[in-house]
Image (cartoon, rainbow, N blue to C red; front, side, top):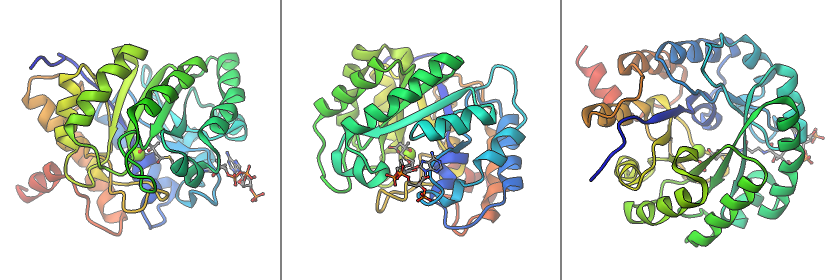
Length: 300
Ligand code: HMG
Ligand code: MG
């Protein structure tokens, strides 16, 4: 198997991690958590969402958190925006990178953003226009690419169609999401090369949740299929409240341990990610799932 020499990790803990934790975390603690992640050397940290506070109460303080983050030069701090309203709020807060999000299955799109896939693409048009006018980079998420909590199997062609629609809107990077952690490596080996053919390897990220323990195997499959961008959350926090049963994202520590062991560079300091997760852990109502984190803490 041939692997890339270098991989980009997009840390999504402060957004995907915190959006589904059923405890209130203060803006101050979120800012400190992001500061600790910053110290670990990520080139991209997804920090919050400018969405309806009724939909995601955990991130209702986006307007307070985003401006307070110490931005490091050369680092991207994307936020989720669902519509023009969120985009205008994000611009006002000084955001330079946003992510729009839709799905490869209709039922999930309805549950998550109250729109069909086609409607969601229409909704993104003013977002991408505003992005272009303001020099903002847009990432596009495609949820339920490997399976849907409501519909089950999702045809890969649906994923490719949504990828093309997002690229037509001017999205710079695609993130292919296994929202509920059902993917197995054969699916990753099928879908990844095709999405890379559509978008180019430098524009394709894979986003795995570890609900059924297959996330690292899926990353290995993604690497061997040419993917070099992966999303993960420190400690393995999170999930999506509109994806019943979805567990946390694959843990950044576990991904880094595997990649560094394979000689693949990330530019991220694993020990410092552990420090960020250690800060987060007591603020949550359940233990963090990262295997590496647990092993590191046992050795103290
Ligand atoms: P809606 O109810 O259809 O839209 O929601 P609406 O325009 O009628 O607005 C409803 C209410 O929200 C109104 O307030 C609006 O003002 C307000 P009310 O009049 O009821 O008081 N509103 C907003 N407030 C703040 N910021 C905004 C905004 N827009 C409307 N931007 C909508 C549609 C999309 C807005 C809503 O469903 C929503 O915000 N959904 C967010 C869902 C979400 O964030 N899900 C989690 C992220 S996706 C994910 O986790 C998957 C991912 O990780 C990848 C993967 O794993 O697959 C990315
Ligand atoms: Mg997710």
